Image (cartoon, rainbow, N blue to C red; front, side, top):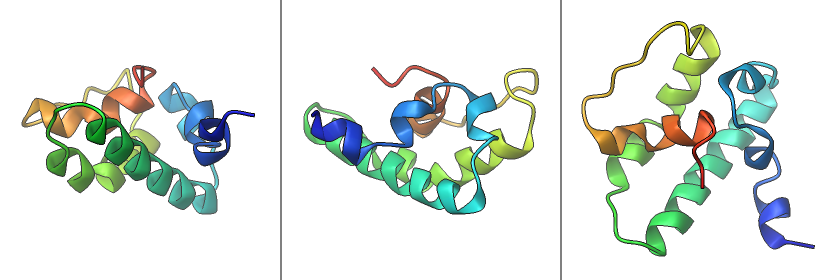
Length: 93
């Protein structure tokens, strides 16, 4: 059994904002923690900036939850803020 399947049980299932919008409020809280841990794990294995991404995790989840993305567009100030967005939209790998 792969530890990442357990560690990121919700995150591994979300690769599209439509799936994100099906989560309950409790699952959204767990998802935000998994997303935060995934970013920390990923950046610790590569060089990259993560503070901007960590700072917008809940905001990114809320925007995708409320708006009809990808029909509604999201524009990020800097690319580092887009890390959570990229993960939610199927570009985790």
